[in-house]
Image (tube, rainbow, N blue to C red; front, side):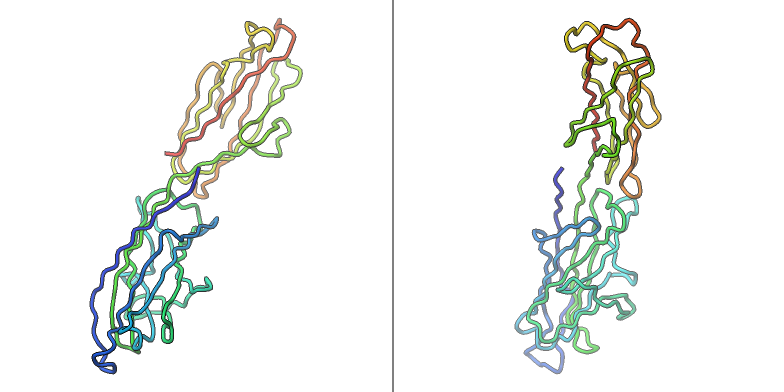
Length: 288
């Protein structure tokens, strides 16, 4: 499943006032943008690029830029059901910028004097799996000349995390061979109570459904389809006939990962025709 995201960006200028030190020539005005097409994702974080550039009449008097939340608390992106994501502002080299209290707010302080353009990164920290959904926050950006506020703007930051799911069969289970979604379970010489077990790992950042069904509804003789042996499938503590379809829903775990035990057991092979039997079992995990 492909991963993608989009960024919603809106910038609003709150005020602009000329500093008396630069009459009629310096406003402190600037442009700030997030480029949604250049976002970068790693296993435990998402990086959103921020570009800041002063206008020609605004640059000479800007000493620092102040980034922070609209309220007095730390900057966080908020999603549905109270989910919050921490964020950190990084410099061009992706090193965290210092956090200080400015005008009663926790803020990132960026030295600007001498720069025509700044390339920064907003890192969304995924200390745990990021739950699917839409996240948003307002980022306040101010230009300052010493202790004087010049221009203050609000940047609406938002991104959508799509539902993702994957399934993996443990490599340590000797009874299972295969890769890439196709595996073979060898039961060997059948006898009453023949059984094989293996482990599955599911990763998902949302609710998901597990569906299991048998293609033939039984073990079928390779030369004589009329010779069939019913069996049972085991999954996460449940046991059901190969002739039925199984479905169960799961909540997303804190880490996004969950391990399951799966298996098959054949109870009665008495008086069955000699030969090789086979069946195909489909396991489908669907995010929702």
